[in-house]
Amino acid sequence: MWALMNEAERRPCWRGRDIAFVPVETDDAELWQEWRCEPVAAHATGYWPRSLAALRERIERDQENQDVDNFLVVRADGTPVGHAALTEQDLADGTADVELVLSARHRGRGYGTDALDALTDLAFGELPLHRLQAVTHTDNAAALAVLAKSGFVQEGVRRSACLHRGRRHDVAVLALLRPEWEELGRPRAWEL
Image (cartoon, rainbow, N blue to C red; front, side, top):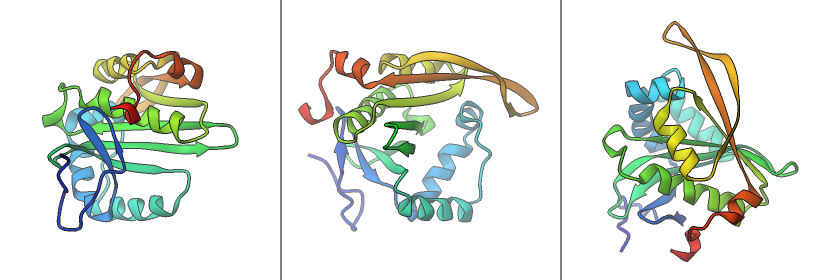
C-alpha cells in the first residue's frame, strides 16, 4: 500500500520496485536544495547550490516546460528519497537527458537503480524516446555503477569539462538506446 505524502494527496504517477514518482511541486524546493547542497552530491553533480527562491522559480518554470519532467522519488511509506528527471527532451530526435540525486541517508540501498530503471521504463515505454544520456564526473563511482547496472554504456569522456572546487574534472558521457533497453532482462515498471 502506497502512503500519501501529505494532506494534498500527492499520488504516485509512476512506480518502480520499491519507489514511486510524484510530480515535483514548488514546496519541494527545500528538500531539493538540501539534497543538492550536501557535499557529496554537490561534488558529484557539479551543481552550484542555488538559493531557495531560485529553486522555487526553476520548479515553476519547469512545470510549464514540456521538455522537462521532474519527479520526487518516494518510498512506499511516502518518504522522499531523491529527485529524478527527464530533461532536454527532444521528441523529434527521440533524445533526453536523465538526472538523479538521492538523499545522503538513502544512498546505497538500491533506490538509485530502482529510480533509474523506472525512469528509463517511463522514457522508452510511454514516450517516443530512442536515446537517453547521463553525464557525471569520471570519479563518481557510485553513479557510474548505478548507470551501468541500469544498462547505460559509457560513450566517452569530456576531458577537463567541469570546474568544481578549484579543480578541473573529466566528465563521463553515458547513454542507453531503446534497443539496448529492450534487451534488458528485467521486469518493466508496469509489470511490478
